[in-house]
Length: 123
Image (cartoon, rainbow, N blue to C red; front, side, top):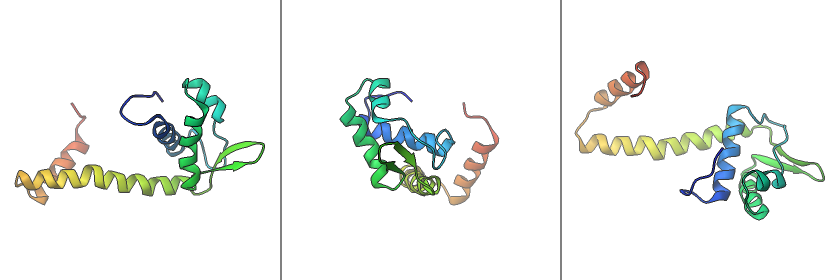
C-alpha cells in the first residue's frame, strides 16, 4: 500500500486494511499491524493511523483485544464484500447506466460490451 494525496490518509489506511482482509493477507481472527507499526511504516502521526483503524472498529471489521492488539472480526470478509458491492454499484454501474442513456445505448449494447470486456484483455 502506498499513500497518495487524493484521499485523507486515515481513509487510505482503512481501505488498505480492507484490501488486505479481502485478499486474505489478514484472515479473519488474525492480528493486524499495530498503530505504531502503521505510523512508523507510513511516517504518519499515530493519531491518524488510529483514526483509520477506528473506522474499521466502528464498522465491526476489526476489534481490540485489550493488551494484545487489533484483530480481524469473524464475518469481516462478507461485510466488506457487501460494502464494496454497494460502492461498485453506485460508483461504476450508476455512472455506466447514465452515460449509456446519454449515448442511447440499449441494455443489450451494454451487456455485449461487458461480455467483450471479460473476453479480451484491457488495452
